[in-house]
Length: 406
Length: 115
Image 1 (cartoon, rainbow over the protein chains, first blue to last red):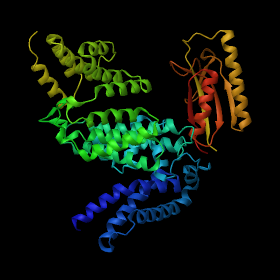
Image 2 (spheres, one colour; image 1 turned 90 degrees about the vertical axis):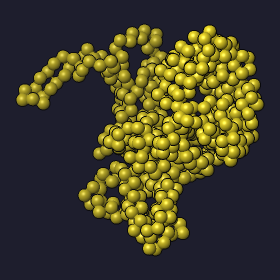
Image 3 (tube, chains in turn purple, yellow; image 1 turned 60 degrees about the vertical axis):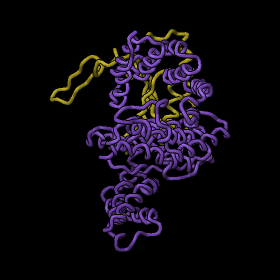
Image 4 (cartoon, each protein chain N blue to C red; image 1 turned 180 degrees about the horizontal axis):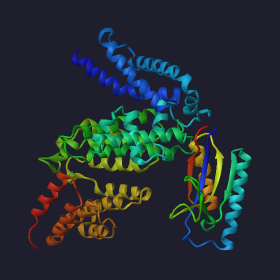
């Protein structure tokens, strides 16, 4: 078997898996039937395509084959288990409302996977399994839990969907903003899980970032009218674009010290275009504002060119929609550049975030800039104690060592 | 159509509401009950006396044993419940939100086993 065939099959798997499974879930009302039939169809593809060639519409071939496999299986089992089959059906009798949402099986399945009645970690796992097409082993490795734990988590979630009759549909217009917020949160969680694991040797965790971006692109294609979807995609593109400059020699490099020549310009351009699209719609939200902040940072040719007043103004807007201490902390960083470290330090000291490493790291940096070295050293120690991330610890340890005596 | 149990948790350490506080709650629950009946989704509902009125019967052994008290020490007890019909969990959750607001208590939603 030529190697490019394997590559093509793996690509087709990733691109088509969600559509095949989602189409079967709609038709048969059972995630298990859909998953089993989809994997049987992939095995059939592995048998037939090397000799017959890859069909012109591989996704359609897989869906047709999987549907046939599912019908065969249901026929075989129907005599002994008719009642159970009927119970497993989740049929949606309500006609779809026109909410600017494309009626797509994958989108229905995504809303089922991200249903608020499921535990947050189960939402993430189901989304990666059913929409991302990842295996249980891959998801377990990405979230650093044993395979059996992840398998159990997914099985339990699927059972709840079936037993509690969690519907398989795009929510009605009135519920859509809240439910979409839940879906976006899952996508962003997947992204951060990959992004914050800074060890570049860990390829499975690295795959989570492109996976989250792929999910956001799919969502944007399906819900083109919602600027928060566009905002989340822009935010992730502008974040991942800086990744090549983020760690060097095992040490975290802060935004101000990064080699901006290593940033991915094409991702930044795409992110900026999306931010402009959001600005034109003028319905700001959490992700759009975070994306806009990242657009200002990535717009500056050098750190000293950063438009801090615009960043502070955007954090003010963000604080108005998400009044969290973390947002206030990041706003204080901008304030330090505008009004100086004394004002910023007063703002940071008002925050109740005593176990959050970024608060200690920010305090340490502000105290360092004020020449208060012994207090800065204590704050660096607190920051180092509060993070497990080796690259971040390396950076904080070096900074602590550079402090001069009071 | 699936049926769901909407049960209301009571924390016995909470002070009992005063008569003037409880009246609007009764009225809200009555109005909610009427709405469920009119929708055709009503199966049954009721409020329970306190746990001090509970008796345990255990006939799993050779001789049935009757003892005083609820099942086990718990922070919360079942205070009352509705049984409703709903097309799916989303519909049951809509009813549960209204019921929780009416009785001013947290509501647990559990599906009945399918027949």
